[in-house]
Length: 281
Image (cartoon, rainbow, N blue to C red; front, side, top):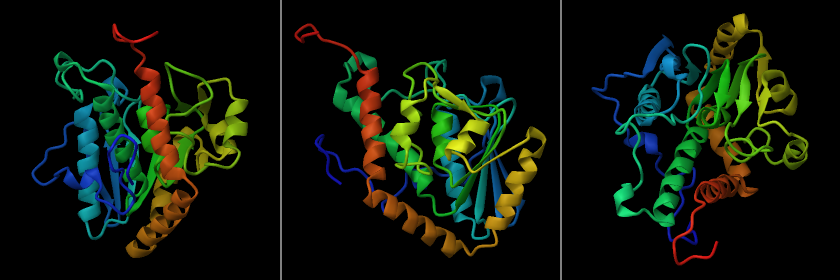
């Protein structure tokens, strides 16, 4: 799909970024890959001391793990969760130099086009999770903020505790991380956020609004997520993949993909507020 910036955005039928992330011979350092049952894989973000904040290494390991699970002929369902006190606190804003990759080194005076390319790739990563050919369940407790919330919102099923917290921190109200969640979009979205003055919502409010699938007590979370995984694993792999393609294809027809890309453009506009000497403020 050509854009005004001269790039071509991917569709759900094009190659996913996780397919380029090699898992063979890889030792996971910030992620735990488990085969709970022949048909069920569990991925755990394992940076509890950083509240599972996403840096390049963790996100790349997550993509590699998705690649590994996809290549496993037995696996049908993937559970995603976080270790420690929360699911995830979003992008790691305090990573030491070298842990995060800027699109262009600051010494080269990066332009809006450079940053737009970065946002395009970020957008693609999220959509790759949405269009992943196997079922994905987000098992959420504690904070699920920013980029971590983006990952959860792209999953097929979200099971969360009553104390879970979804949303964003650090900027505007009446918004969530990725436009409006696929499970909720577009019905009632503007009406809901027009009356939402907080940047976060709890688990109970999230299930009432239709953002998540089910809310449970903390001690029931793991059991409930596994129960859903076992039920979904009874479906043939081909049925899961074809159903997801059909559903997301219908959502794309009414504009979901365009909404994602519009969000990332707006996100860039909000963060790229600067004026050069020859520009008018």
